[in-house]
Amino acid sequence: MYLSRRMEEKLMELFQKGYVKGTVTSGIGNEATALGMTMPLRPGQDVVSLLHRDFAGHLVLGSSPYELFCQYLANADSRTHAREGNVHHGNAARRRFPMLSHLGKMLSVVVGGTWAARRQGEEVFGLAAIGDGGTSTGEFHEALNLASVHAVPVVFLIENNHYAFSTPTQRQYRCQRLSDRAAGYGISGRTIDGADAWAVYAAVCDALEAIRREPAPTIIECMSLRLLGHAAYDKGSYVPAETLGQWRERDPLPAARRRLLELGGMSDAAVRSLEEEIEKEIREALAKALAVGRPEPSEPGAAVFARRPRTTVKPFHSPPVKNGEAVGRALDYLLENDPRAFVAGLDVGVYGSAFKTCKGLLERHGPQRVIDMPLAESAIMGFALGASQLGGRPIVEFQFADFSTEAVSQLGLNAATWHFRADRPAPLLVRLPCGGGLTVGAFHSGEFEGLWSRFPGLKLLYPATAQETFEALVAGYHDPNPCLVLEHKLLYWSKSGPIDFDGDLEAVWRPRCYCEGGEVTVVAFGAMVHQALAVAARSRCSIEVWNPFVLQPLEIGPILESVQKTGRLLVVQECGATQGLGDRVISLVCRDCFASLKRPPVLVAAPDAPVPFAAELESAHRPDGARIEAAVAGLMEGR
Image 1 (cartoon, rainbow, N blue to C red):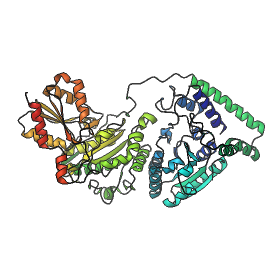
Image 2 (cartoon, helix red, strand yellow):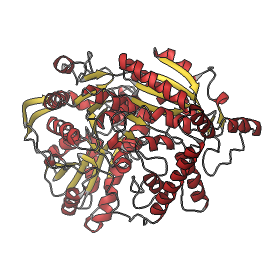
Image 3 (cartoon, rainbow, N blue to C red):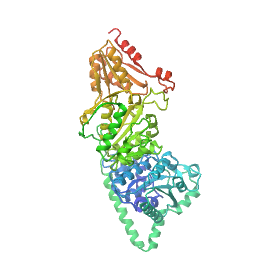
Image 4 (tube, rainbow, N blue to C red):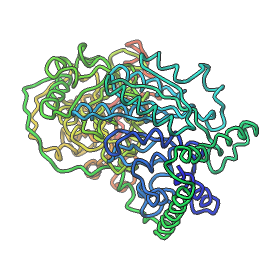
């Protein structure tokens, strides 16, 4: 506790002198909670996520003073390679997950990691720290409910320091104690004095012993203290002077010193000697850290994706099947050939998923590998991220691509940046049934490839045939990065073809050309591929049809070569003009082969409006063959 206090005081000095930048939050006053909750844990074995004010916890779990100083100085020896700020650090390889500023999001990650380790036979526990303010988030409920339903032994430790930044707890909740909420999840909960390190330690030990006997989550609320403002730039003037004075009288550091002397284990002279040793350790660590040079900028984007190894897997062959059946064949193939694989989502088990693409998987592979989840898309995604870090290989299905917007922070900001921040792969396969044509309205007809392509670290694949569907799912599964596969619902049962997969994963990651032509290059997405092919088959023009297939990272080279040959580009997408990637393709073509263009590129897209419900309205909304033919004719005018 003394080491933590003195290091944080040094960091405040360094901030004032300009050596340390960013949001420097302080754990001064929270040392007893941070220390007491982490001491019972086994570093590198139990699964942990700490918060802003848990500096002492990082020290307990293996971070050295030198390592922490380097992180705050953002120098060349920073654990995050200076890519991340002060408190967003950990050691994912040692099961100490780096936090996300979006409070509550790390709770489900701990649940998933703990579940995956136990699935492998390890007797591990989880510790997920959250502040009083963070308990107001939806993810707090989702993670607790998920952990309770699946009996995952995680200690949800609430650090209640009475303020969320400047908002007092009376503006956060109305119950008497936050631990009272445990009853709603059918689990135990208790509230203790978070300024007493011995009390926190004992409470966590008791909780671990209880959930060892009967695995289940539990809540411990620690009534802690925050003796400074929210961060280095905040003077905390919103805390009444009388209240702050009372808190200072309960300062856990001098209280722990007095308690230590009362216990008789150390004399005052011995404690002073220990403090002097700590001061020396701090001086030496800080001097060493200050001497480290600044980080060198690397190649832009080099750290965004984990490197994909060139591997081959078991071949697969099938007579003609429909696209929806190809999904089921791919999932069965993955579950059959990799014991780490599991499918998670809503109604994927007994029901076989909303579009029956998981039909029969539960019977063949069992409920531990085909898992019906609570209706909690964000927590499911966090659970999958955590599981991916401890040997699980999750396959997550969203019922509709539209519902993936519930997990934007988890998928786009947490999983997508994991390799960048934690220097660890995050192998996740995410399935997105998407697109219109089924008269299911605005909230069940979106594609959202434009949205998801905007998050660095995500890979997107959009197949149009049974072969491509199988390949996309298998290749995305084996990639070490979060991979999203868009599956157009209209194609599930309307298109079919054989599957002839030779097992070469590297060969999958390429654009697809369906027919060669010399006059017009058509680039189409999803169901629009088949519309474009129908037009090409009956057109007098020589049309070359491409599907980019891998939408992110987009390999534009072959498409550029096609445009250089034809001089004309038509892009066809089902979503609105500003919502998809058609404008991106046109931009790259104009940039890289402008001189080859004989006519300005054309985009055929839906209106920038929600997808209407009635069949007549939806039919008029979605691009069709007539609009594509008209666009081709326009490109060919004046030849």
